[in-house]
Structure formats: structure tokens, C-alpha cells
Image (cartoon, rainbow, N blue to C red):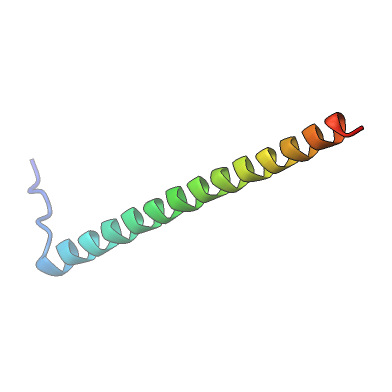
Length: 58
């Protein structure tokens, strides 16, 4: 059975940096998704309010 390759400190550091970047990118995407959901909710509420004004107007 062959020995498993042992990572050098440089390789470990590179993997840690890559994971950190991936976490940051994932967090950024989740934040932007949440913002877009909030914006859609605001737009829907505004449209609903306008429709109610139109329907109830004499």
C-alpha cells in the first residue's frame, strides 16, 4: 500500500485561503439573494397598494 501524500504547509495555507474565499462568496450570494427578496416584497406591496387605491377610488 502506497503512502498518502502529506500536504506541505504551503498547500495547507492555499487550501485554507480557498475555503475562506468560497465561504465569503457564498455569504455574499446569500446576502444578495436576501436583498432581492426584500426588494421584490416591497415592489409587491407597492403594487398591491396602488391596486387597492384604484379599486376603491370613486
